[in-house]
Length: 298
Length: 266
Image (cartoon, rainbow over all chains, first blue to last red; front, side):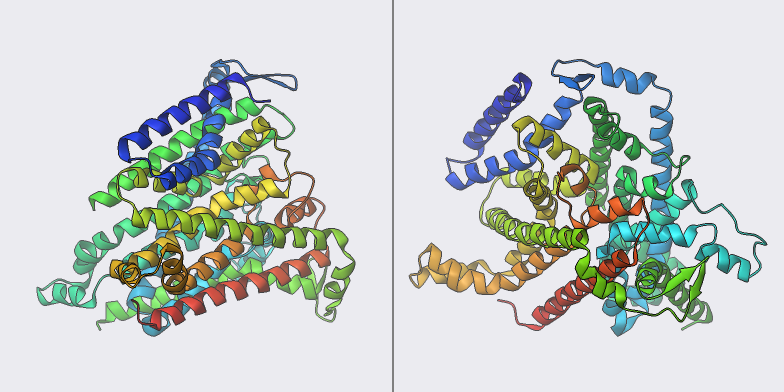
């Protein structure tokens, strides 16, 4: 089922590859091998993915002809653009919440935890490798109507009866994503905070800085690149997640990733799903490039 | 230390404790539910049993998915470490702009949302006519973990002095000998760390796997399928076992790293 466009991309790819190789190297066999390897396993899938977004579907047959129908559908459809922006906002909230929680913890570890800092860091990292699905499932029982959070809040007398604030809506998605993604922001922030030599901090005190000033003008700017890297990771992962909204989001927690996924399941409209995903791809690449630029400048 | 600073310290300490509790709550509850029963939202404290663990032997589907996951993980480790070492070595020894481009491409699947890597491979396999199976999952996982494996090995290679390999060549070693007797002993720990990390990640990979899996199931996919009907105690038990496995792996990685840091680097 190799179609024409696919072969065309392949040929273009090979031409591109050859010219590059001739330009940069004098025929090293290893370069060619590594290039072909990367092209086959990463670049061609990505390119065929992009080419799919220009196809259309007729019942169950995918029509391999160029058309902008999918993008027109995206722009004119009632739910797509609002959902896209709502998902951006959701990812932004998750990112900011992770930054606000993650930074102080990384700061605590780097500045005050002394010898036990690596141990605490390890404790914070381990959940990252623990079953993703299970964490979401358990968050469902924690956030639920008779779940742990409601019980605790009632015990402390903050609310009088169980609240439905926490499950099957956007809040549930946000809380769950924070729990899952938080370690990701702590690691790079900690690494960049830890690199700051103690004597630099002491020097700021010697020239008369108050602790807050020393933080504001010295420590924070140095640690900013690490924080940004972590924040971008969290943002991109929150943006593309489709399992969390599916499981804890209910009907109002409809996110962009979930729409993409649904086009590959029941709806069987691969080209349209791909078109939606390629918009996500463009946004992600822009964010990655921007991060690269920001962190390099610092 | 001023009073404000002491206050900050304790405040941040409490925050850290709170976050640790929040991060572990879902995990601890899973383990808890594998031992105790609940009735109408209340825990029955007398119902402690490890029966689910012994019953797990009869749950053919769960066991099969666990075996599949381990298989995928092991094959992924082999491929990703081989390819990762190849590229790290390539980046380390070659000059030119091309290597930067290659590095960027290797990082792409890791930086992009997993849904995009999954979709891209799904479409690619369809176009090539490769049926979805555990092998396609292996390819997906390899591409995903490649960036991490590559970076770990490259970091290690860059701590080695160029004179190390040069002196090996000066002493008359051919390329293979220099690799086997000089380079490999120096980087083997980083290979082990990279491999363990790749295995740990592969074991729990869900988002890419969902697109690439065919009729077989890996363990996270089995959980995803079971979730709609609610978990049995056996599922909780299998989760606990996997949690123990991943924790051990992560601790092992940490132990190897701390051990290797004490050694004098060449």
